[in-house]
Amino acid sequence: MFAFNKSHGLGNDFVIIDDRNDAIDDYVSLSRKLCYRNTGIGADTMLIIKNSDICDLKMLVYNADGSSAGMCGNGIRCFARYAYEHGLVSSPDITVETLSGIIRPHINFTNGVISSVTIDMGIPRLEREYIPMLGCGTFIDQHIKVANYDFLVTSLQMTVPHSVVFVDNVRTFDVKRYGQSLEMHPFYPEGTNVDFVEVIDRNTIIVRPWERGCGTTLACGTGACASTVAGFITGRTKRSCEVKLELGSLYIEYSTSGNVIMTGPAISVFNGELDIDPI
Image (cartoon, rainbow, N blue to C red; front, side, top):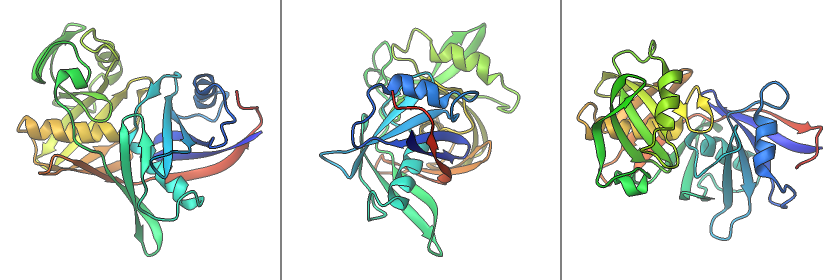
């Protein structure tokens, strides 16, 4: 029997486990078991809390299929809230070591209650070698043809690989069919997250994500950031956007310094104990 927390960021849901005592041997198998919605807790992703030599804490990310990810935008907001509320850190300004580098969440309060979390997501990388993506240079509004559909795609690394596709009506678009095809396109040796985006105005976009290792999700924090960056560099939007997702909005600023700042909710749903032993 071991403890867990269930949290979500706009419906993108997580199982959070504190393994600072190194009790679990196999995170891959455990993530598949716990994230499976019929027989486990049910989640898009499992987040593991570890000790860090360089930050307050370390976050490991495992998707529902067992694959590892360097970072998770919605996940780190939930991670930060959990760490603060459970006394793992004492300050609302937190440093978190991830496989994609050091991330610095800041917890926001309204009337003494946690209302949102702001994350400096760092600087996006547009060069293909950093995404990673085959070829040289950048890939901005360029063509990829999959399943007889010719897409204009902008690819970038926003702590993890993202490919942004602007469409006329994201609500009726077949995200599952084309998201899966683009995720596994030969251009991307490690796969890619895919973000289908509809522009409402120059400060508002709607995003439907397809997440590598998860499939369709209700929200994707790194995807909201990548979509805002892609909107600006292709001339479709301004630097700051309200990113509308299925259950609410994230607020993204692509600052003139090059850093991407994300603010959004992190909701703790429940704490519990699971009647299986850690693998």
